[in-house]
Length: 392
Image 1 (cartoon, rainbow, N blue to C red):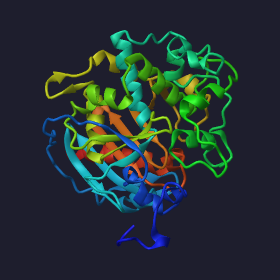
Image 2 (tube, rainbow, N blue to C red):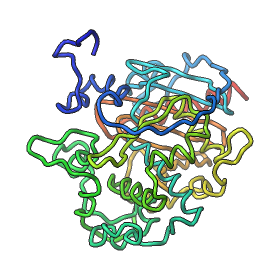
Image 3 (spheres, helix red, strand yellow):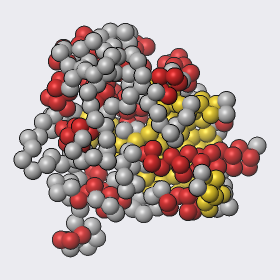
């Protein structure tokens, strides 16, 4: 996309799908608001909250993986890292950008956004606006007769809904790709009618039972978003601004991508603001001595979810994990570390025991972030060991 106008063979567009091709994605994930309609999450009128910088030299770190040891730079490059931010005790100790990324550019967070919505849902539960034991159609009558007809809000929050749905990102014919077209996150195939999320969700049927084993299904994210909008009578962008973004000292507005009806889907934000959100969660909703959200709404997240229910999903790279309130929970060496995880390499890791936040953006060539776990998770462990040792 350099030059004016860019050469035809170098142009990146949403409509023709070129924005998802690789390596074009390394540009488009950092410029998504130039390609599709978005809605702003206002940062507020206050000054940005500037973290103290206490940068460390990570260059000598070695990352131990199952396939052998990797040098620091190779570990980052092999997983197509776009940006990496490490905050320890609220200080920025590492901030790096690669490829087309930069401190002022908003990067797609993919389904890391579900963890933001999960936190908003928990805040509405605390307010009494949502009953976690209520059946979904009590707030969304449009889903009566669908897979969610007898599912509770808590079932949706914890991804324990019995749903007839194929989540195979490696198969372009699977349900997930058809669903993503409805969200406005990928262009519709030629001849396919463009419909919205609210139109497609009622068409999904139930399979099995609710409240059993954990099964990750993308539509649950959007059912939760619908529940939150309906309960609050506000857009996700407005609610996220009012309850989070105006308080964390963000430097930039975040943005939401929109489906054909104007409903928010995924979000994009700068790396520093992604880190600020992580610090907000680590501090249990407290910013600068002021309690923005009640600390009790973080209790369930930091306690973790049902590990036995999660184990049934059989994620080889995620042993002893759980899932709670749209957060992936790592139970590791006696610690409970919530993570937001999104396709193509988006991660936000929160380690309360070590007062550590790791925010990562990426542009991997394949969607499932589990493919990156064999390198990314050991990289996070190497970061933790190095930082806590250097700043003991």
